[in-house]
Length: 99
Length: 505
Image (cartoon, rainbow over all chains, first blue to last red; front, top):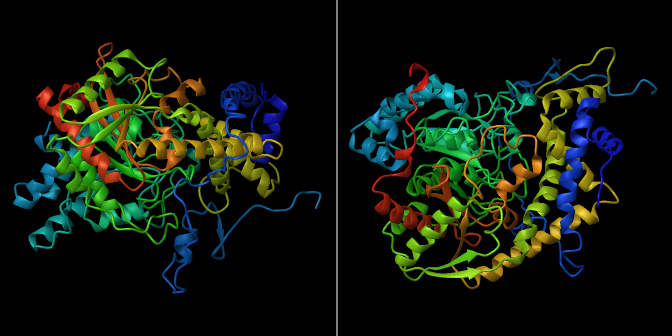
């Protein structure tokens, strides 16, 4: 039976870049275990001979003519930005303190 | 209540064509209805009174010049808040997008505008379309017009409640695991999930991109077909959009409304019944099947053995895709940015923002998806789920080799009480038991209202599934069943819903 520990949830939250509080970890970890137990029922249902499906309707790659079409203006692209500087997205420092 | 809001979109189209009404008059009637009842129903997150009336005035002017763009020119529509609308807020029911105004339109919205449909506003939904009750909206739940203490289904509870409460004649929904069809079932309205790729996903904020599909939310099958004809078809901006000419779904619905089912072979799915299915829902389902038999259909039972694994496969594939899709909400280019104390790095800002901006269900699914995709678990979970997907497609192929359409109840129960399943994710997930297989296999499906359950007097839905690309069949059979029930009832089911008098009552 798969069990997902509180520590594991904390690790996954780090991977997913979500700062979960202790209270959230207490709340979510048991729920995730219940969900995982339920979905684990599919283990072994499909054998090695069954190919995986990523998209139900078969797809082929799509190309288009190399023609310029209008896109967003810089102002439009920046219109939802939390911070803007010199017509660019302004972001917090991207390197860690130890760097 | 204004008579205009009670009419079907098809009737309103005739009224506009004959000059019996104007787009301004009927858009205003719906906006007034929203003012009257939406405090109680909360179907809308944003109402665009001025924009809708301006578009209506333009429609009237066009029509006066003899330049109407199609039958629905001037008939107003509500749009689920997961589709980008230029100049109108688009939140996906999430705090992380609060106040975001997209600089572009989704293709579905472009087509609505091109066909002249005034946009009334944006409808409420579970956050990022994750849920079956609209309770996971960061802006509060939508209430079921049949009983305001109950859920309207989800994730598109806002769109379904808007048409059920006569706040809009037409609405757009999106269906990833049942988010159009299940709300349709529990609100006594019609919802269609088209074939995957039948309607463009450009500008639809992705939940699980291999499953998402936009479609019509309406009160009648004909209205759904007319709306589908407007929004459907190939879009070069969506590389998964199907390149083919589609037949007129309006014609298919009109043909079906004669109620003749002779020559149609219908398969009842064995696995979508039994334990956990509400007796009143099953009773209505059996009656509907009887009606189809009386109308000439040949009905057989069909087993789709892999359907019992659909729910589990879905709750691995969906979180996996969602965890990847939602990575783009990183507080850098748009949306919420929460800056912690001190000298935080971009990563600190991301972590704080995603904690503050996402609700519980979104966090659950992102973490579940991250787990399912992590090394060591990938083959056991995500890989296995993708194989189940193959088995489910094979079940559909085998079934459709024998029958023209498959049928089941749309949802196992009628609308439950708000709050009842909010903190029990698995109980919530079970609502989508019957709708999920269609998303995994990409096939089209419709939910048609088929009566009220005896134990609670709440609506149930009848689901019709057809092979991929054969969307016309769901309209034909759906319209036939609707006509047969209407003959039986003498009036539309929604006539039995309580009148909502709004704050003045």
